[in-house]
Image (cartoon, rainbow, N blue to C red; front, top):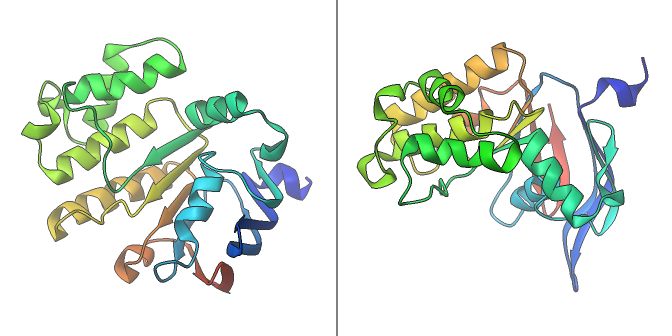
Length: 222
């Protein structure tokens, strides 16, 4: 089997340049299917920039990114949107829930943009994260931890090839952080590929592999 066939993600000589600033410089990284990878580093190290490039929210200035064998640099903006919708599950620190939709409807929005809306499947996704009984609640009626679990259900609904989580516990207390990490553990044990950006060593400790960025470069990979 070739290396390309084994890896869900391949990043080759990737740099991101903003005028005189190199946010990322010559990043090389491969992630096999089913791996849980944590990306750490101080503020300004390039963590979120790298996550945005992997998640098709931004593009590299130099180098190549292959996701499930597809070279992202060769895709149009519309095609990148399609990849983000169909192959990537995004979990954000800020939740990004629609305030006037219920938890169930927020999950179903992801279905709408992917294929067909299926209320039963959306409810099952909420049940998977322990929120079936909160399905009809609006975001303002949910705790921070519950809102984050709705985000996870939304990220999972289209069966993504890779789950990207940007500081998924950054706004949570210890109890809710533990709940979210338990969900990620269960997903990993079920075979999901997970990439988590975090500044918290206790969150990174759950991962199989940790890379550390400084000034846009990988300085540690273990």
